Amino acid sequence: MEQIRLACENGRSIECDPARTALACIDFQADFVLPEGRAGALGLPISHLLASLPAAQRALSAARQAGLFVFFTRECYAPDLSDLNTFRRQYDLAVGSHGPLGRFLVKGEAGTEIIPAMRPAEGEPVIDKAGFSAFHQTTLDTVLRVRGIDTLLLMGYTTQCCVASTLRSAVDLGYACVLLKDACAAYDPADHESTVRVMYSEGDNFGWVSDSERLAGALQQLVT
Image (cartoon, rainbow, N blue to C red):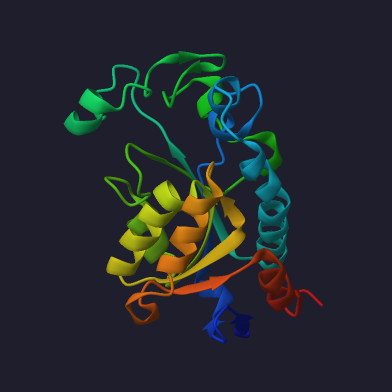
């Protein structure tokens, strides 16, 4: 398969081998974004997350059509919270609390499921993680390495938390990372923007910043 050149911000670009590139769809979960979910019920500004969905769907569709490996993640914990670390068990009282779609971030509850607009297709793995990074005590690194993946395109919720945590872990493990900034979001746009700005620090050693439109354009050459 031919390589693609993905245009990025700051005048940069990255050459990707589609066979070695994966799209990471991080925590598109009902309780985070749907009006009937926990965040919506609490009055959090879910509009910022909802506004990013068309871009996420654009990136997902383009990746599928081009044959990229696609995987999803969910932050979720055992019903007895035995896999929630000691620090968060003491201070993060939201996890396991009752909400309109069941207990927050608990496996098997409706609010923990991936939203219909971003539902995984058959064969697309869902990585459940008891933490912020998708690499934390999961099989994700093995799942990627056995497929020869060396480049990750990242999108999802929230930019400064689970997306950034996964990206930083991936960089330390040797993956090249591209943040699709329009397909990510945070409840506070300032958190999103500050995370994007951090991507330009440290001599660009965190990776590249692009968006769903540039990704779709780069991948289009593979399907025409």
